[in-house]
Image 1 (tube, helix red, strand yellow):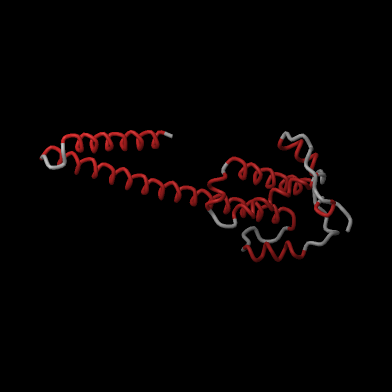
Image 2 (tube, rainbow, N blue to C red):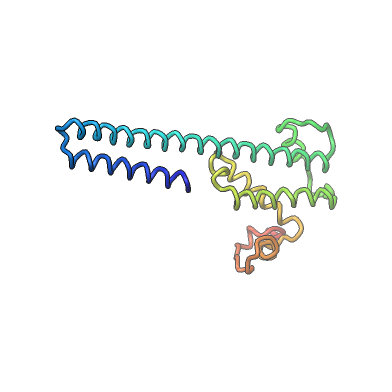
Length: 183
C-alpha cells in the first residue's frame, strides 16, 4: 500500500513539474530544465515500479516453491510413518509405495491424523497465501488434491465444510464425487 502511495505522489510531482514547464514555456531555459526533470522523474518511477513488480513476483515464486517442497516432505513423512521403509526416499519411491497400497492395508489413527493435518494445512495455504500458490505452476492443483485428505475422518463434504471452514453445509456435490459412495 505504501509503495503505491509513494508512486502516486512521485507521479503527481512529475505531473506538476511538467505542468509548470508548460506554463513557463518550453522554449525558455527554466521550462526546458523542468520539462527534462519531469520526464526523468516519470521514467524513474516507471522503472522502480517495474523492478519492484519483478521482485514481488520472485518472492511469491520462492515462497510457492518452498510451500510445495514442504508439502512433499510432509507426504514423504506420512508415507514413511504409515508404510515404513527407508527414511530418505525419492519421490518415485514414495509413488511406488503409494501405488502398492491396497484397500485392505490398515490406516492407523496416527497416520490418519497426519493425513488430516496435511489436508488442513493445504486448505489453509490455499486460503491464506493465494499469490504464492498461484505463482508456481501446478502448486494450486497439488494443494487442492491434498486438501481432500481432510475427508478421511468424516467423508461427508457438508460436515467437513461446517467443521473446518465454518460453512453452512450448503454444498451439494454429485453422488459420484462424494467419498465413500458406491459405484
